[in-house]
Amino acid sequence: MKMRILAIADVESKYLWDFFEKSKLDGIDLIISCGDLAPQYLSFLVTYSKVPLLYVHGNHDGCYEETPPDGCECIDDRVYVYRGLRIMGLGGSMCYNFSGFQYTEKEMRARIRKLIMKRKLRKGIDILVTHSPAKGINDCEDLPHQGFQCFRTLMDKFRPKLFLHGHVHLNYGRNIKREDTYNETRVINAYDRYVFDVEFPDPPEKADRKQHRSKGKGTKPARSKATKQGDKK
Image (cartoon, rainbow, N blue to C red; front, side, top):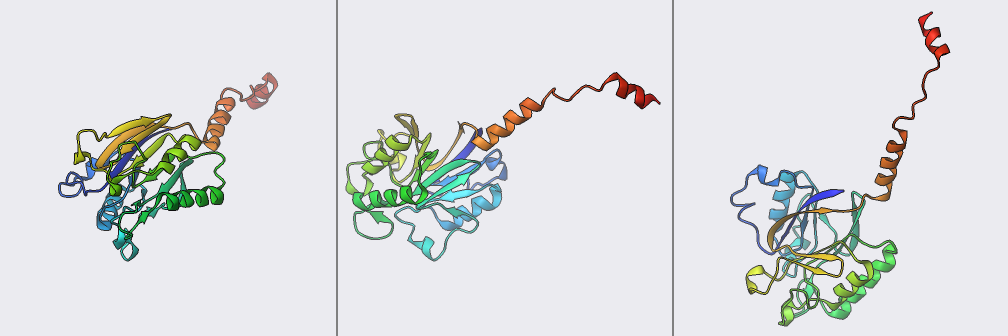
């Protein structure tokens, strides 16, 4: 199964908002926001794209509590299933001033543990969506932009195909990458906007349908001569 995903985070893209053309969203199958974006911006994109828009909270998204983005799906502390893909959401940043969506390493570990117990994720996850990066993977040394070690542990355990995050702006320094790889996981910084294609194995139910259709081809029983003669009478 091939998908085209639009990942967004941190700044409202002028390309998509100020200079919008509907054709710029053609071919997009899913939009994922990694946080710190105006709720009006997300509502705008979901209205014109006609595809699902999933989001987690950034550390500056306190306004979402009173003004959540219309028509969008919050996946914070959830495993959302779309087209058979299991998408885990964990918003927020490292705690640095105890305001908004901020968490200590211990608190983030507790969120993950609770989610794993709740969902019984024995079969894993396909996409991990967060606001902050993982520790040591395109994060920064200052406390507000440090990544979470438990995100690395999560990737070690479940080997998701994709890890999408924001929080660390690409213009923070030349060492910040748009894409990276950790073990078997493709890591993408969603800053501003980023469109990419990715292939996933077909979910079991879809694979079963394909196999069933394949077996059914050419198996229609031939009509006997007696039947044909009977038709002529």
